[in-house]
Image 1 (cartoon, one colour):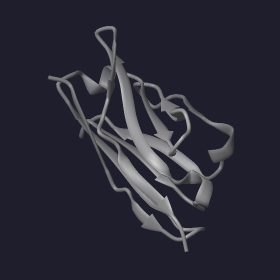
Image 2: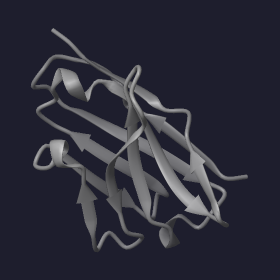
Image 3: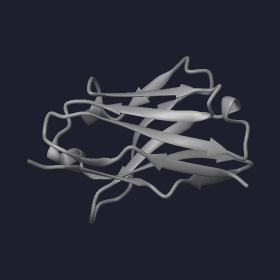
Image 4: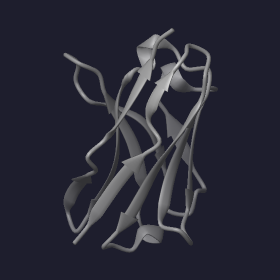
Length: 116
């Protein structure tokens, strides 16, 4: 059974940092590209960052470029998102995602709240 389990969210002040993690199981993590998405209340889910299976290439949504870094540890089957210089507009539920066996798979999400 494919599982994605996010963690690391929380309440942070504007300008602060968080490191999100996504622990995976049930598929060959090292052979799959991975992504982080986020969804704020009343808004559509949006792609934040993507990384290829071997970490050779990454891509970011424009508003997080230079502030967020996606990475992965294939030995630990874990995906990360380092989020720095957080802004109130970054507040959302953050989800990790992959496509395996033709299906999109989502975790349960981790809440990020940015507030003073």
